[in-house]
Amino acid sequence: MATITLRQTKEKIVNQVEVKQFLQTQGVLYEHWNVEKIPTSFQNKFNLTPEEKEELLALFKSEIEELSARRGYKIWDIVALSESTPNILELVRKFEEIHTHSEDEVRAILSGHGIFIIKGDEATGYFDVNLEPGDVISVPEGNPHFFTLQEDKQVIAVRLFVEMEGWVATPYTDTEYVN
Ligand SMILES: [Fe+2]
Image 1 (cartoon, rainbow, N blue to C red):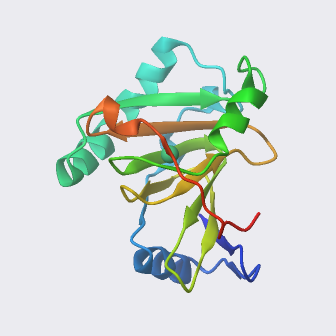
Image 2 (image 1 turned 135 degrees about the vertical axis):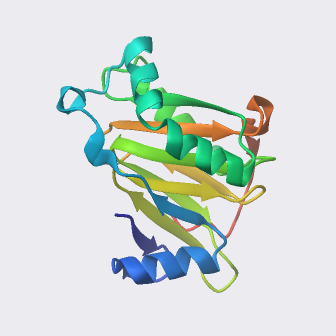
């Protein structure tokens, strides 16, 4: 289950009802998929073959189709990152630049962890959403944000797109950003 850290005040939100409410007020989609059904053979496995990625997509077919029917996504894939990913440090550095997209950015975490740093409303400022397996999140289109990995530096996530071009990142310079 996700937790929130507000960057301005360092306040943490861990209660799941409050996390849901908070994200709702910020316009961020937050749902859950049942990751218990992932076979144990995938445990601690972050280096996936194309066949294994297909297996995971097939396992979550109904969740993907339901979410897509509701929100208009047309294509999806699996991203798997870990310390064995070539150029992982360079990749993460590239991720850690504030940007926007012309469509919303959806991620369903199947394994490992991730953090979305999102610009909230004026009173809230930037906040971190610390993501756990099963968390499904979508950053609204045009909303400044970036993604990074947690200490474990590993994640497997489903990405869904309306169209691949929608994911092009437009850099966003922000003096209000709190590091
Ligand atoms: Fe993004």
